[in-house]
Image 1 (cartoon, rainbow, N blue to C red):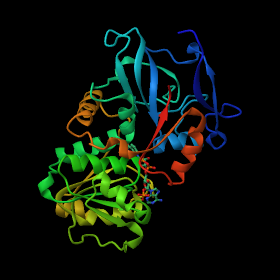
Image 2: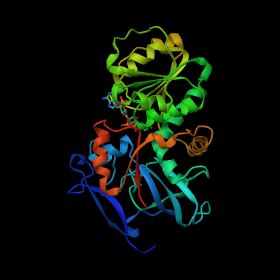
Image 3: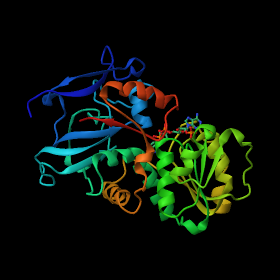
Image 4: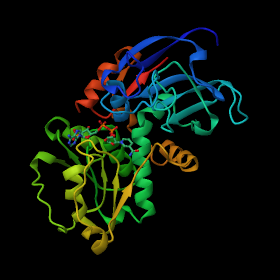
Length: 337
Ligand SMILES: NC(=O)c1ccc[n+]([C@@H]2O[C@H](COP(=O)([O-])OP(=O)(O)OC[C@H]3O[C@@H](n4cnc5c(N)ncnc54)[C@H](OP(=O)(O)O)[C@@H]3O)[C@@H](O)[C@H]2O)c1
């Protein structure tokens, strides 16, 4: 593979890794020697835009640990060259998280070179496009459900709340829960615009958070068996005192705030579990297991419906700005070849 290929590079004028405010992105011809060393060269087909990617591309978050770097925390494609006994040319593969697109070059590129211990063999039932319709968003939703079920959540225990519902994680959490037989309530800031879409993702009830009176007591009447929270802050504080005995809340995101001002009463009087969900460093065995489940028992029948847009390397930055503004819907795919 000698020919140059296209990749999106992020850099600052002085290559200062701390100067994220001035990050600039440029799509340019790239040569293989510019990629890091690794066991496997992957010809990429699709990536996607997660909130973290949007933070990296716009410089709104300190995601990129080295500059210059190719961002992109997810990628799916086919092995082009392998020096690993675990993979051969032509194998369908995917990577999500595992520090890709943060400490080493990631998925916004027509080729990626990777260590073999982070590469997942893509299940037969999952095309590259479908894998990236899930991406880190779907994987994190699946990880949260896995952790909640390990802690006793079952469909018969009651309704599960999903916040930040029109986002990537939120919409896929609704779809997975629906597929697994759970009844769900979706919380959104945009019920007027997207109520029908949320029902079609699997929500049984849709609530606009602007209709809520967010006054919180240390314990309140029980409403949900569990919750998947993508927003943090006052919303997470409001949810915890309303979770049923021994129920669980998966804390995934901070779209509203990274702060949590609460009391310990739900934990010590109702046995409520506040579960941390961290996809980037999920152990490899569990990562493989969850991708297999997403490709089979959890796979939404209308996965295409979660994809609101498909962009390419040239209009990726514009779309990242929309994600930061909270104006997108579901998943945005990046077509690489
Ligand atoms: N822990 C992990 O491993 C992990 C992995 C992936 C993502 N995350 C985090 O999880 C969150 C969701 O990720 P995502 O990829 O789904 O992002 P996303 O597509 O941008 O979705 C976030 C959703 O949150 C809601 N939202 C945005 N700003 C808000 C605000 N100020 N107040 C209340 N709600 C707001 C919006 O939904 P509505 O318009 O419907 O309200 C938005 O669609 C992000 O914070 C992300 O950083 C964490």
